[in-house]
Image (cartoon, rainbow, N blue to C red; front, side, top):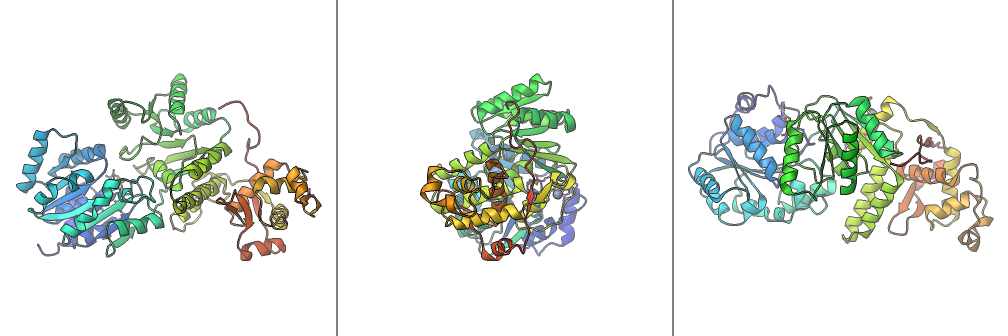
Length: 524
Ligand code: ADP
Ligand code: ZN
């Protein structure tokens, strides 16, 4: 092993090979740590510059660097880019002709390669590991590491075989990278990949150039058209829809409106998808309307907007999908439309899944967090970053910062609602509580004698729909707990939070009913 290279080596490689003037925040530290032979767990948002964290050490350390990635298209892109920069790199993928694969294997033996990209199944099955044991290795990089965890959103069983790298090559440093990892997934990655001793590097998840917007869905097509025509005419963007049918409809609608748009979903033949992916990356001003099948590995720097016409499943998914906008650091926008139907659909999805209970509970909590984000009156970026464990100032570049949400004093309503929950014994869902507040004499209400309570009818001044919204807001504010495992029964949250409100010592601010939130205007 050569002596520890100087920091100037890494910077000169960064400059001369990759053409970057300097490391981005975080990169330099990670590179130094890995060059010195340390294991690293790297959490960096999409577009943050993860590749540099192993590509520079790959060139500075002697030997071959092996990069594990689940995505053939991504591997091919990276290899092509590296070769263009004069770096000897190759990928071993299932799509390679046997002859080409033999050439790669020969180049490994001859020590001609600096980087080898390989899928996890290709690496761990067959004779490749035996071959790698015979040549000097610079490092292992494991990309998209959340694939190892069932808690993550993209579990791939092949990743579970990767701990064998630590067993067989204990002296070779491992860099493990992901753009999505809440605390649970992060711990799981460590445990599953035997990374107990690895240093953890967490880059800021802030993407300051992305402007976040969230709107209540009133007429999705019309809202999307307005958004594109007003702010993004002629620009590249991605529009996510939940179903294949919607993908086709929306792409068709955009084309009718003179916008260059293509659809993309898993029901299309593989060649067709590859062709459309290629067109999206290479053409200007193309809008891709897609399901989440259009996913990882979209390395297009100038995507100017990402629009979600349906609420995504989790915060992580939302963050990762919106992160495909503005990778060139120029201004970009993320628009999400959400409606109560989305919430109901996602709740059903979680409830009906056959995941173990603890995973279901986690998913339910994640869904509530995302809903809280949609309904917040605070800076969206603050809420988003808090979810990933960061604190920040109000950003001045999201819809709630730019057009402060209209709020009103809701202390009286909050007290009524909390009292009603309490008086009804904390054992009823929102529907019943709202019936009591609005004075509806349902069979259930009278049978329980809830029509004799002081709070019965005390909230008549507001419609039931508004009360439902207030329940969600108080849940998002942490005053009310929705017990999803018990039919959505409402309970009071911690005493320290609730008691001051009940006593009139603390006020509650509510977001005014969003525009169009109550009524449906036309069809989507
Ligand atoms: P990730 O894998 O984290 O999504 P990439 O490694 O693909 O991100 O990098 C995203 C973009 O940032 C690429 O276009 C890359 O060239 C650029 N980039 C990475 N590091 C730097 C740097 N130090 N200086 C300038 N640009 C960089
Ligand atoms: Zn903001």
